[in-house]
Image (tube, rainbow, N blue to C red; front, side, top):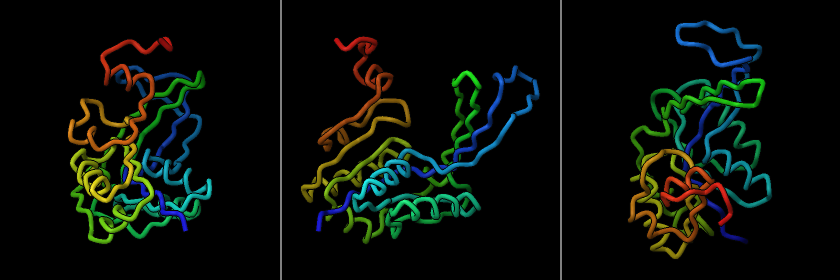
Length: 200
């Protein structure tokens, strides 16, 4: 059997408010709709991999609220293995997205459980050592990513980092663990300090 993909990362409830425009300071604006959808870079990547037929485990944390149930059932419905999805006290990670009819959006994120008191269990460590690959993003504490990456590298498991999430430099110790770094244009500009508006 193929070794599984292990995704360690964030799980968010995404609250989409559809608005005509951004509210001005002090203004109350009516939204035409509200939708709550499962999200978070880690959970999204795990869901996508599982739907493609890849055996996928997700290591993450949700809070002790109703949004946790939405995320668990959504991930399970995609076929993601959730033995290492822990429940911690407090809110599940949440993104508030103001979506304008023009397609522009503005996002406010509450880290919640994604940022709360992580501890990799022995079973999570075993999972990392036996993975076909480890996929990380930057919506959980950097020290958690680093601990997981070091365990994976020690076991000969390739580590991929999606540079999306927290701004700021990536720890050199983490960079040295990576088989692949995947930034978008903005992230690449931030990492390299060079313009990315052309393919040159």
